[in-house]
Length: 496
Image (cartoon, rainbow, N blue to C red; front, side, top):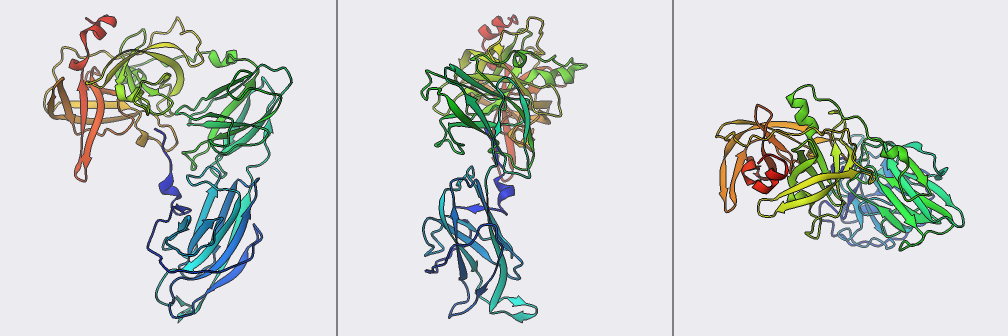
């Protein structure tokens, strides 16, 4: 599944009213402030109750605004921010956004792609003193708290116009808004428009809208949101929203990551098929030892709605993974199953192939796949011998045995996609089920490891991490052993 950095953003934005209870009713009116202009103001602490003294501002957000930053500066006491969209603030228990940290100078940042997105309209903003006692400023109790306030509005910038058939290199910068606008012009009589994002190591998505930029699923005429980084979109004259002459706007974005820059390439074409250069396969790295072979034989499995890990178990591309890894949100099997290969331990795996479902074992939570084509439906390369695991079918697993684990846990990366992770543990015990036994281990297993590899000190596969039970005292992970693999699967792979 896709990850995001809400924790890191918490200092900048607290949405949906997180914090202490503010039940003080208030009403006030204020004029509109000029966006981008710093205002010197103050909260006057007067009346029978010091707490909830406030100052109100109003800001108008226009249609071309992508981002709003409201910022307190130069305050000598703790001030909080409360904000409503298109309605005055009457009670601090009922606001749309708030920032109530123990800071003097707080801020709220909203964009069109925030979890609670920015909208066009009027925002009412209160700067509030939240404490019951007068603050001490310059060694004296103060009855007024001076501060600076700025409401900055910005657009996403002008789109870069694509030259059809020519790839461009671009970036989403961590110092920016993690969205980039492009445009492409479609002439009268054009039958097909294709857009391809490639050369990226992160999970990028795109919205496409005719005539104007789109920043949300609801606004866009066409969307490509999945767990893939390399996204493709084909618009034809017989699409639900038919292709028509004019300008199309493309918003490329990373909804998960905003602390690391994303680099990518984008190309537009008037063909339903991907450009030929995208169909070229890279050379797979050669394994110099058994560990390297295990690193290359452990793949990432992705669908439109999630991702996990898998193990290549034959030179011709059979893969075993967890059934739940390829199950969509409705409980069915995903139509498209993508396989990413580890080409470097320093970077996330690269999406190269599609796999077909061969068989499942529902109780055992196992799925057998086989590589069927390249990412762009091109034929598999004839010269490839895929790296694969030798399976320890005759090696018993015993208590205390050391095991190693490989996979792509979502906790294993700083960006929106993770590189491969290796952890170790021991066989902690066994758990007998109706369909067989499971191996318990104290090894570090996390979301995304499912379907990956558990192997012994000979680098032979002994099972597949599938689930974790944890509490405050620690965790136990469950490994589905090779004994759960049906004989007909082994026969298909030439092992039985």
